[in-house]
Length: 224
View 1 (cartoon, rainbow, N blue to C red):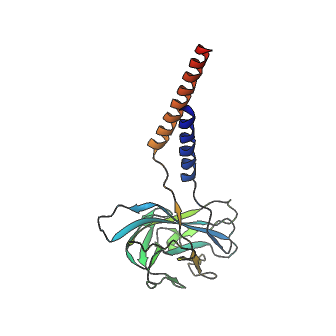
View 2: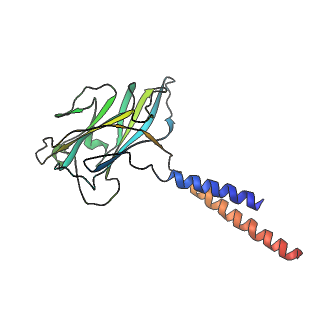
View 3: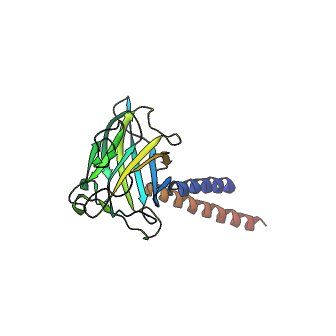
């Protein structure tokens, strides 16, 4: 019985470890490293023909090799059947960005491109120039944009190279620098991070395992 409980606990603990670590970065562009992930199952939605997903676009600017100083717009396309979208979080808060339907061109969020959602930095964030690029700051995601996207049932792109991202580098004056990021991506799944109650249950399970093992040893010693 103790052995069975231990195996179950180890399996549960391994699942927890997997759930608390995200996938590897998906692609690189001019030394920046990007990832595009969604978490969990579709979010609860009263509309029976739509489902809502939380999508995270992350970037590591440690190895950036271009001459831009800021990222002022980013856009994602994870479905051609977008019903609605909102920005859940972003650098300096969602309120520092406007979300517009459409992709990006040389002048910024274009308002065109079916399925794209573009986050545009507002004047409160470095005068509208967005977030600073910091080469050499160490590996790891520097900035993340979190979108809640409602799509027609079954239309989320999760195949290899199906989804897309776009982004724009700008200089100190807010003018575009270098080429636009425009890359096909694979939208990958990140298991949700367990609630604190889950950790408590696992710790309680470990305590029970220890108690059961100790009790078994005492019984064996008493009958020896």
